[in-house]
Image (cartoon, rainbow, N blue to C red; front, side, top):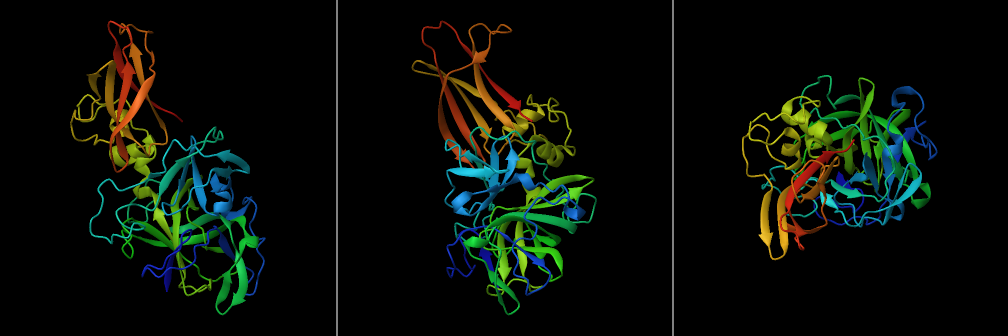
Length: 401
């Protein structure tokens, strides 16, 4: 039994497999001799998959990997996807990458220490963010935040989930299923499956996973295949489709795909959703996605929005994260912490000569990175004094839809 990362492929024993990339689904279809790769290549219009977020799956072009468009120009993909291409296709339109940003790995709040040192697996969740220039106007993708172990209303376990990916499909018929297809079978497809369960860590991979078995059955049952890193697993909750998993690897007996023992592995997104948007953070940290941004639960002077923006605990009073003002030769400085994974925030340093209402303007800043730690960086913004006799600085943090 092999575990394969689906862009840069490995067996966990470290024996190198193929370096081919691509991203795909194999759809069971009408039986084990069905070689058609045209099934489910348009957005699902009816049945259990109707309305699934087809436009949000991003094609990585000739890199043949995949991503998930979260909104506001941010794409989530697997951390092991390399290289990141210069452009992406979102909902049929090509967009250029913003090379000034990242990629930014999505890591645990507290990094584990008891896992292998293999850089593909150790001390990091297999996810990262990249950004596009002049992005499409699309609503933010809803993300599931229920990380419980039970079968409650928000659970991502059981039921019917929908996989969406683009890439290679079925190749030749082999004993027990099909070989993986070649580049001529590349296409965007959707399929269904049921999440069998989750694990807090798997084979030395230090992040929570969901897994689906490829139980052979006529219909839309699906399995991720070669290059499917970064594709999305979705489930409908009370009429709303939410992202529940990010494809990371697949287990197969050789190259055959349709045995009930074959399974797909997904990062369990609910465990890390609080790093991506305020409402996810509020749901996890405050118990409600609609918790007030202006409230101050721990009475430390930082409203909830700033606790999120500075990556601090809203239940522990502390002023250590407050921005610090300083002076350097010819410059006034403001040093603050930025949450790099927040896809819904803007940070702006503003200046005023008087503190009067209406006098604040966005400052021309020289930014320096003081340090980085996990998902945060400490930024020093330098604003030239020029000939000013006095100048005031402030940090403006704004949530964007």
